[in-house]
Image (cartoon, rainbow, N blue to C red; front, side):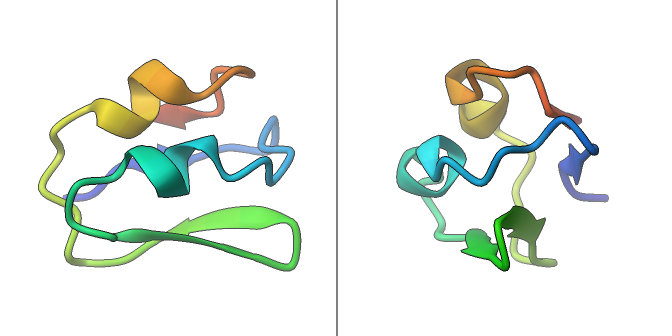
Length: 54
């Protein structure tokens, strides 16, 4: 499993900066989560629009 990003994402990059394993990249204005995600929840805590869930 990996974190899930929903349509609320605004591509701000907060999650990308918070990820300790660099599993999130913002592409075309939307966060994309790779299979490297360790489900730590750092991105969930940082997302200002609550667009990420685990």
